[in-house]
Amino acid sequence: MKIAVLGDKDTALGFKLAGAHEVYSFEDTPLDMERLKNKLNELVEREDIGIILITERFVQKIGLPDVTFPIILQVPDKSGSKFGEEAIKEIVRRAIGVELKR
Image 1 (cartoon, rainbow, N blue to C red):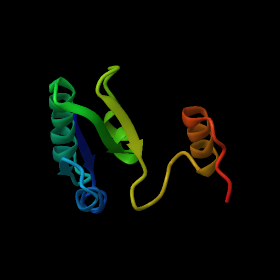
Image 2: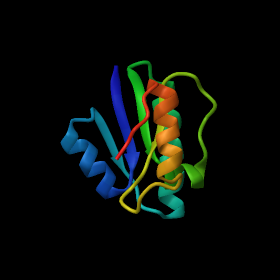
Image 3: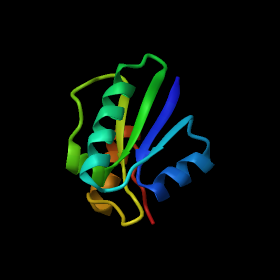
Image 4: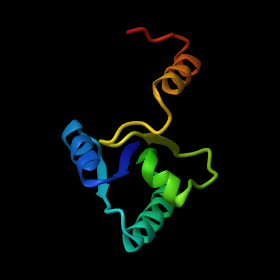
């Protein structure tokens, strides 16, 4: 299964350097948001995609499809998380059963 990333150019570059299989970069313009929505729908339909990472800021603009597979995860961009540190700690605690401490 492949990992696909949808984000701004900085987020996309970081995940590309980290070894993500497919990385797509978009600007925050109406035309690119339409392209992003189309690309997300295309990736959801593909059987070889297991995980889609998309920046929180873009999710706020286009929403997410209601699917159980592939797994779609929101990631913060360079401006930080929209959820806040405590919310992320709670998500991690519920997901893996371990509380993160500083």
